[in-house]
Image (cartoon, rainbow, N blue to C red; front, side, top):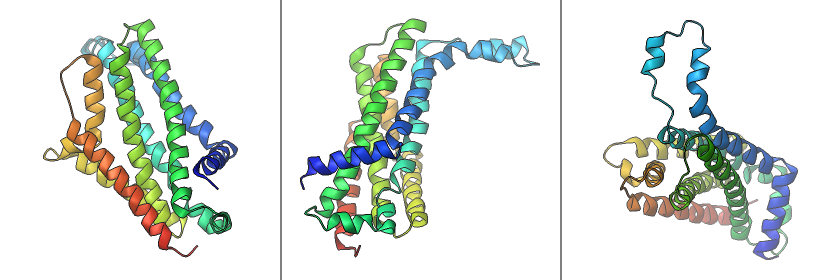
Length: 253
């Protein structure tokens, strides 16, 4: 059974379990509403009882910079969390139920089995990021000013790459684990380690969090680059996928 057939099976599984719709809904809602939230935040604060004029005047005026920043912040927080939560059980669940052993009795390699799951998750996140980006671009254009398409596409491409890294880490945790509890612990721990390392001043410029800053600066027209972070992100992702394949190949299912 070739890779395309296995990938088609994984996409059908994502549709049947509503994972596809959940990922799209979360990314689209938070992506599309970011410019709206930025634009109408002052009015929302005015409706809060006890809000003084001094506090309202201290708030920054809604701007395209704030809209882009809110979009990146929302996609960063919820996209990474979603990547881990929706991936960490996709292998271990099949091992627990015995469906992995049944499926692997067919002419399907274990590497194809894992990489098809990674690819299906990537396709789903690509669709979610694409629709969220279109919505965010449209509302930013209507409420503030047009954004240059090239840099905005680059921003979303960098965000998608970061999500792919966390998908790979969660897939590794799911491949290692024998139970869902263990998979949850490994996947979340791996995500926390990468996030903490990215927050350290000395090495933060080499980790995925830097990609979000780079993309934001590209959209806002500020000179910036983070090629080392791009290389490290791709390297960690490939290493996680290779490790997952090697470990899964030697397991008794």
